[in-house]
Every structure is written in structure tokens, then in C-alpha cells.
Length: 140
Image (cartoon, rainbow, N blue to C red):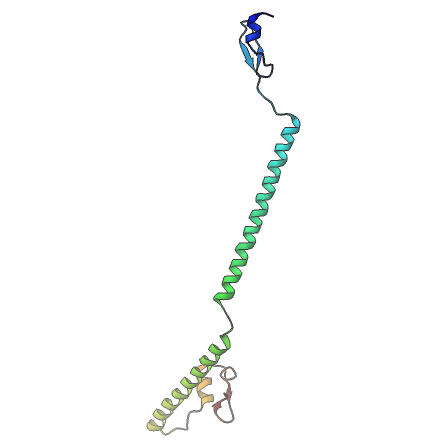
């Protein structure tokens, strides 16, 4: 062997004698078909995982909405509030009947205004207001 060849290492993967001028030519590493298949499989699995994450995020978003609506519109105190409104409405109707009745009796001496007549003239539902028609009072 010549001393020139001994000092110069020859790596067949990196260089190859190319053209006529003797310049080294480097090989470009290429993926094997099995490596490309693995990359495609990894890419597919990443996309599937991202799709599952999006589904889970959507589920969490919906659950948060349900939780918010349940806490925002709690119906536990609804019966108490409904009873308060009914009581206030009944008291207001009794006060109105008394005031209208006083004016009518002072002006013309007509018959007394009943709760039933007042509720019918206002177009309200006597059942909803729990009116006892026979005794002209509210059921409490």
C-alpha cells in the first residue's frame, strides 16, 4: 500500500469517488421502506391521540356547562320563593279590593266588591291564586 492510502481513511458510507476529477461524493442517507412505514404509523397514532384529546376536551366542556347550569339555576329554594310570591299577590289583591270597595261605597253605595269579581276583572286564574269562591278568601 502506498503511504497516501494508509494515512487517508476510506469510509465507504460517507464518500465515494465520483467524477473523473477524483472529488469525493457524499452519499445521502435514505430511509428504508420499513422506516417510512414506522414514521407513517407514528404519524397516524399521533393524529388518533389528538382526536381522542379533542373528544375528551369537548366532553369536559359539556360537563362544565351542565355543572354551571345546575348551580346557577338551583331549584331547591323555588318552592319557598313561589310561596312568597303567592302570599304577596294575595295580600296585594286584598288591599286593592279594600281600597276599591271603600271608594265605591263612598261614591255610589253599590254592592261590595268580592275577590272573585276583582280577580275575574283582572283576568287572573283563581285556582292559581288559591281562591275559595264560597267564603271569598284565599286558601293558605
